[in-house]
Image (cartoon, rainbow, N blue to C red; front, side, top):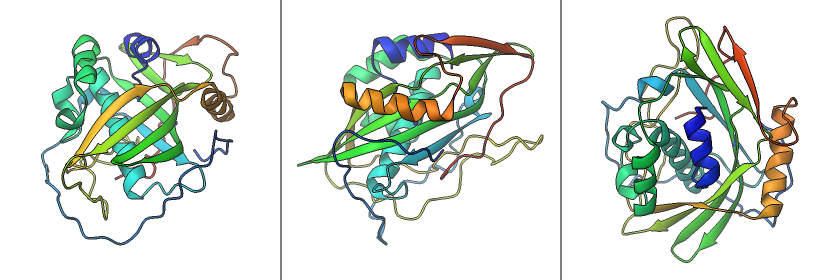
Length: 262
């Protein structure tokens, strides 16, 4: 993770987390995937993720009652990944439809912080802790552990920032008109492996955000933060109690295959 990206995520609470178990605050919403007909889907076959993040991946997990392939969890995964891209690249290079769906304040923050960044390597872990229904949508509470992502600061020199994994946010999704039903995942928009055999970022090729507005950045509360910290430390045992540890290396960290992918 770049220094700018980390600072923006902490100060602005905008960082929108593998199968470690943890205890959530409150009961999670039960969600199971069902067979459905896609009512609206706009293919964007030419979409490619920006070059600077192409050599990193995301591994998702969730509380037992949450299906990572269900409609809500699919939207959460897409929004979190799209946010990560927008923080390190121009918003226009994020997932199809994300620029239209995201709230105005977030767009302004991307303009302040988003830019073409150094190349990233490694795997970010992300976790859906809880999904709460709203009359016109839902709120998703997520956790993030990105200590295994390194930035290539100079040719052949990689910097990792190790922290406790207590970064978390609540993301609000509100329906506007007819929403897209994710249905069966489409083929990935990027190659699963580069020529060297290293796994690469996967992305949906179509607009998943049709019919949704996304508001990000709310804090989920201290209990949720503690649960995220517990989850994150199970993944990165060398994480410090407070602050971060900088680790430089001549080799990039291991990059795992994306899960569950697109």
